[in-house]
Amino acid sequence: MKKKQRQHDPCLITFEGIDGCGKTTQAMLAFRFLSGKGMKVKLLREPGSTRISEQIRDILLNRKNSMSDITELLLYEAARSEIVSREIAPLLASGYIILCDRFYDSTTAYQGYGRKLDIKMVRALHKVATGNIAPDLTLLFDLDLKTAFSRRTQQLDRLESQSKAFFNRVRRGFLEIARKERRRVKVVDAARPVKVIFADVSRILTKKLKIDESISRSN
Ligand code: TMP
Image 1 (cartoon, rainbow, N blue to C red):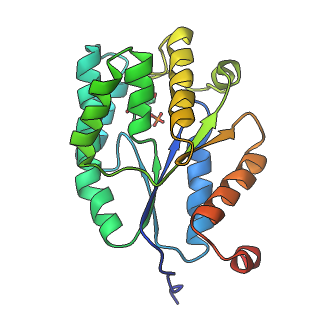
Image 2 (image 1 turned 90 degrees about the horizontal axis):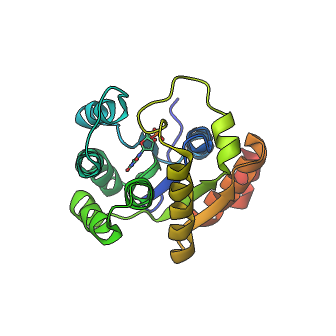
């Protein structure tokens, strides 16, 4: 028999950080944790999660492609416009909790701070792409570059192939966003074992979603 789903205010929760920070693993664990509690939850990724956004992702990450920084920025925002209009907005309207592996903070950090594009312009484009939908909560998995780079196993994609200086700017960019938006962005130390990190993540989610502690313990 299908488990009865618990009602909850719709909510957009994003998972952010540099490549190799472990956010995708944490987003998957969070998805299991919340669905295990009978919550209406959906896991999405950016760029991706729609037919067109996945095609744009292939263009962006293909190492054989070279493009201007503005083209790169616009492609990320185009992919975002698709996922927002086809997935995020309708799911929020149907009362879902959405977990999104990256969202517009990645563009601010990678294209704004990393590529050194004008931050105001970048933020203005977020508004165009999202129609003003903003995350209710963002988990920023902060990790030093040495550890992040040491976790690399497969062939690097176009973005992962950027320099150390680039990733330093991206990391600083993420931390700057967190400093400016303390209420929304929670920084999680990602240099620890997966289980220890998830203990923090589940605590933050439990608080934000006001999950009943007794239900938490029984699951
Ligand atoms: P992923 O590896 O986390 O799936 O993300 C794909 C890559 O795209 C990753 O290197 C970060 C990069 N990226 C940007 O540069 N700007 C963006 O807006 C997003 C969403 C991702």
